[in-house]
Length: 603
Image (cartoon, rainbow, N blue to C red):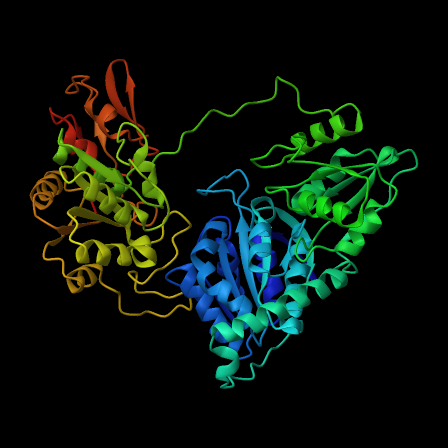
């Protein structure tokens, strides 16, 4: 054993390795991404690791491995679980042979997601056990226990962390690699009565699942990570029920001498009912402190009703805890003070340093800025709708670009554009999608558009990486997470195989050519595509930077007002370029009407 200072996601990865994981599959998504990357980095050479094309594929790869007796881990964020829910819901009925853990990173806030959905509620819906750690150290231990439970009950198990666990840090004690468990998969045993899902099998297994979860509720009441902390000597007849990172916020906010009875729920489903009954005994009132859904609150209300207990349960449903958003030490402290009738804990005063507001915009030199601008200039005042997608290019909605009219979920830009076209056929419909998202969930939409005779222009923003989540490889990069060099999957070839007659590839930083291409292609009938291909500026930075000739600059502000590059600013009525930020992409040089900007070097 040794001690390491680890990010929560690294701790989860090391816990999985210590548990003897054999196969890890996932799709990158903040805040989950580093789990799979850490497994790949610490891989002893015996673990198969892949970035799958999407979460559904990852779930099915892991299911196959678990069918064959391997220990398998799936990694995704909460919205990725939606993509994987189709196989997971059926897998809950089928079961597995090896241990299978679905690691889902929830994002209260949300900080970097479309939703702040609560995977604890999903676990209830799927009827799957779920683990909910409260610290980095506990996450390391708990994921090993999740594998053990999964293997013992023959079912997938969900492991739910949140952003503050995933990206928090702690010095923890971990096992040496030599002490990691070695799992030898037994291999797949053919048995269609078990592995082929049919209504009769599902009906029988549903009854077994309900009975199993009832037994687990009893068993989990004795699980050491579900516990009751006794009240202090002068505490009133009240209690606090909490979970996850909120446990830390509660403990930090309570004074030791007046600490009420505390219930910490580490397995919100199946809910530890016997432990909850012990907790409720002799109390008059409970405050449930949780993110995001009132899972504990509803469970306690149900238990009180079932057993006829006269205990008032308060929390989100009563307005004592905010119904949305992330909990903080301050918000929890204020809620506890109001509940207990004590003074709120002292916080940093009004003179504390406030950081400047930094609205999210594309990076300096990002080729997506040039792509959006080219389309905007080409379409001019024509009636046009720009359907966006999930990726760093969603930032194209920021002014002055203002080029993202819709954004729903991964791949939806293509199909949403079809829906708008069928209602407003006089509208020029554009659908923007990144290269990674194209492979993850865009191909289906293109096939649907072609088959159903939509009229739209597909714009594939190909920067040859999965940029938003940390530059992970995908099928178009020619690399795998195992380090193999493979043949790239051609976006052009896929589009032509679908049937698109017009597929053109352009450098978006060649502004004049890009604008001309958009004008020409947009007038073609049916589904047509332009691939704007230019490497992510984070991975491929030019050496030269642009600069402004102050004598030539006429102060028209076109470079500043039209593209919104953070490296450009106005000083004494003249445009200026921050050389510490500029990447020399030359876009501003091509826009300047008097040629006052020069020096850049386009890749």
